[in-house]
Length: 398
Image (cartoon, rainbow, N blue to C red; front, side, top):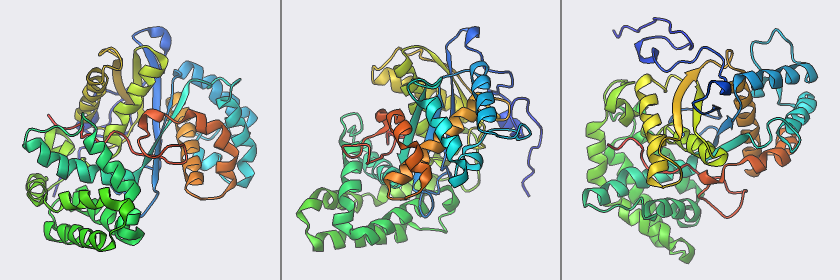
């Protein structure tokens, strides 16, 4: 029986030795220097379970410290008639449904041209299905090319393959087969499959082979690229077998095996991308505060901080010291995280609206939220109606 560490840690509700460091209990304050604070929270996040539930995931970021955020949250509470006894302001609990229309209007005003969050908030949208297809290319095809000494990430070939598979997949496979491919990919790579007893290598490649055969029979000229990618995937069984051998057999929250365990988790590449986007947008060094998630152990926060710096340096997008630190905190302690939750929740309801879901939530927030979408994360489609995945490069490679 595995003994769990229940030692409390100051500044976070997470228990145990894996969460002792990188916690922020005190209010964030830009006057301290060392960089502008940004707060990051998510909505629609279900770890690496990327099929069968919420299709989109959003990260909301606000470039305000807790000192400024406290006044904004107080205004929301007062004008939105939110009970002072509520420990925190939450989008899903307080800003959804017909009765919350006045609160959504208030949130739109805060984000609008004359509001205190104008120019300080952003929404990063992830299409989980596209993310899965990008990972399918990344963890198999890209690995095969990498073993041959070829880099198909930096030259844009791997991201383009993911884009082709996502856009042409419905024509090449039909929506049912594409859905089956996504579900099987999630089942094979997800951490629940640590022992390979959920989706085996044989089962995985049976589905890939059936999808290729269907695409070849269909011969849709608009789906030629997707069919070629399926041909490449059929040749990657050695890479999948290697992944299965290296996969940890038990939960490993720390170290390199923990990172392999989380290779399908979109939060891992999304956080560095959001940090880099904020530094570029504001043109200065930033410090990041993330809502405490069990995924974000001390080891992983260290890796994400290095990844954020590397992404900026490799792309020559910003100075390599653009990140002054990445910490975690409880939203009840940090009003800036509560504002990030509102931005993330608003972004998710607008993403659902683009996907055809009709309700007053998305209609009310659409005009205010669409300008906030961080287009650095969009690699799919030509317009805002097409949301896309984060950079598909695996950030955990040494």
